[in-house]
Structure formats: structure tokens, C-alpha cells
Length: 148
Image (cartoon, rainbow, N blue to C red):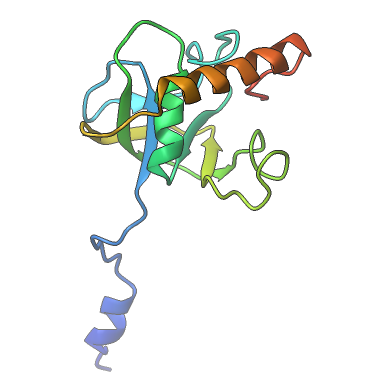
């Protein structure tokens, strides 16, 4: 029996320039090929060991991630490829922004760094100050920005 070659091709993974791009904003100095993993000190909140790692499909949310990360390093935005399943970030979705308009996600699986966005524009100093002020007020109320 002869196999239809076009049927076999339809089952193959086809990579295109239109594949979903994910970003991770941070101040960590990493390299292409490195992995971002759970279990290390978080860039946010009280710097507890991270139970989840976060990524987004929007550059704006990644910019916020880089700007709000703790530490003294340079703000960076990496292009990442999730190595396992991802889920909506419950810190934003259905609590603050129903429907996940920021396209923010989290995972317990590592992300591989596949590139870095080197040219991007941050938010104004006033916007960053206002965001940090809002997060400080939440912290005073006992609400952490990242809930595991």
C-alpha cells in the first residue's frame, strides 16, 4: 500500500515566522541558550524562592517586568521559549485584568533564552513611580504582587 506523502507532511511540525513570541523582563544578566528556572530567588516581592516563572506575549508587559525587577542590574528583555506547559498568570488575570489582555503567563517549567530585545522604550519615570507606589500600598495591606 502506498502512503500519501502530503498526509505525512501535514503531521510534521512546521516552524514559521508567525510562531508565538514570548518575553521575560528582568535585571538578570543571562545569555542566549541559558535557562530561566524555578527555585532561585525571585526578582520580585520578598525575593523568595520562585515557585513559578513568568512570561508574556506583549512587549509592554515585559518592559514592566524589567522595570519592576529588584536589583541593580541593567533592565533586560529576553525572548524565551517555554519548555513545558504555561498557564494564565492568576496575579493579573481575572483579578485585575479579566480576560488576560496583558497575555501574561506562568509555568513551573523552564524557559530557554533564544534572544534579547536590545532596543525598547521604557515607561516614563512618572509612570514607574506611580506603579511602584501602587505596589507599595498593596504591600502595606499585606498583598504581595506575586502570589504563588
